[in-house]
Structures are given as structure tokens and as C-alpha cells.
Length: 120
View 1 (cartoon, rainbow, N blue to C red):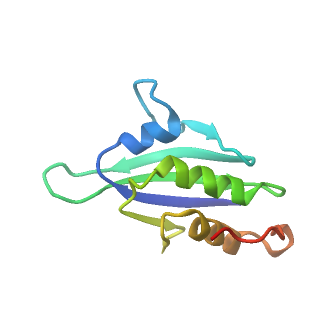
View 2 (tube, one colour; view 1 turned 180 degrees about the horizontal axis):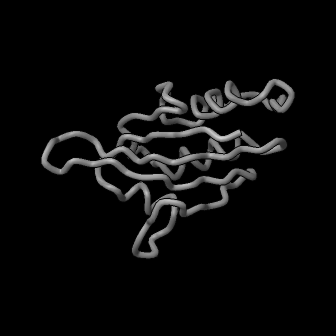
View 3 (cartoon, rainbow, N blue to C red; view 1 turned 120 degrees about the horizontal axis):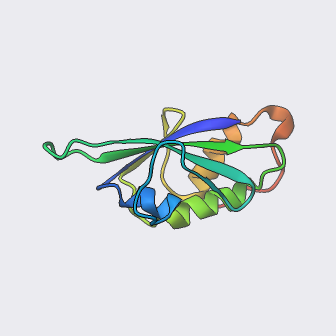
């Protein structure tokens, strides 16, 4: 299952937090998440002439058997309070572990949902 995640933030620093500080982040860059997911950088949208948030656009691939709580915790930790907004497949969610986990589980095929309880 692959979901598109958009994170509203100030500037592009969050992209470097996810994909490393190697000097550049380019579309197609990938990072393996704890818990067995793959996060792919798609783009960022910004308009420095207007005071609107930069939108970081990524795709998260979560396969069967992935540890959704671990992925959600890693995302929350990496975001570290820098998100102004967040959507998962165009549905707005709070950028914290429990909401991210619920959003991912709701999009998983019924047969692949894990029974681990949701984080607070």
C-alpha cells in the first residue's frame, strides 16, 4: 500500500531531516523507515513571495507485515513539531503518532491490518 503524504512546514529543512543532509534532496530519493516502510521524496511546493507554508510531498509504501506503530513513531519524531499541517491521501490528520497510525491503518487492506493497539 502506498499513500501520499503532504506536510505543511516552513522551508525545506524537514526534507533534509527525512532524507539526510547530503547537500541535496531530489525527487525519487528514498529512505527505509523503522518498521519496514519506504519513504520516497516526490517534491516540495513553495512560494517565497507569499507567506504560505512550504508543502513537502512524499510517498510512503507500507507493505504487509510492516510495523505501523514504529513507522508512525519515527515520522512523529522526525517531524519534531515542525509541521503546520499534514494530509494522508488528501485527508487532514494531526502530525502526531496516534493520528498518523490511524490514518495509515484506515488505508490498509482489511486482510493486512495488524492487531497492535493504536498509540495515544
